[in-house]
Image 1 (tube, helix red, strand yellow):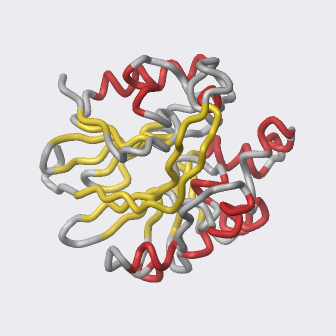
Image 2 (cartoon, one colour; image 1 turned 90 degrees about the horizontal axis):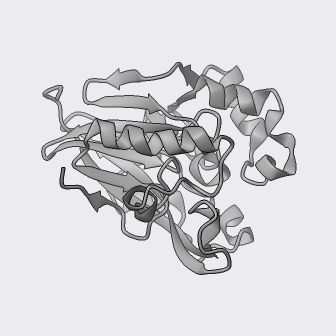
Length: 242
């Protein structure tokens, strides 16, 4: 523990009914499941950090989300102005985690170098991958402008917040390890999209490397967090008893 602790708040931005096998590898194909979309606020007495941007309202509706919320209105309900945010941590660059980046005009964004290079060098363009990305030009411009910054592996962002590279779901998927008053917690992004992924040790159904995706679940266990904030579970967190 760093001595600096944060609270973690979820900001819901939409829901959708999806096929279970898209989120739990080769599990229950054709069985519908409710998926939540959100971003996260990390707050200490002195600053607020955003984790992921959530999906834009228009694109969310095009992709059949329900209960969509405008990011600015959702943050206003948390007494947060996106213009005041200077740091946004991205678990990965899929549309529902990064496509609202333009709503944070004064922020720098942090993603793994592998993730940024996957986007910039066109390796994502096969339809199997590209269907999960959008606003490519906007994200590339952020990188060109020095506002989308690369991380190389496990990196301390600042005291109490550490990035953990895992890959698997995407080439540069990362989690964030955060010190809270209750102990260490993990914001997993889609390395662990649902609580069930971790409880039953099932990797995500959307992935580029199944072996890295399985290893990510093992890494979660090794870090021994007291709580998981998973990527898309309707319940925002899972309490863990080690």
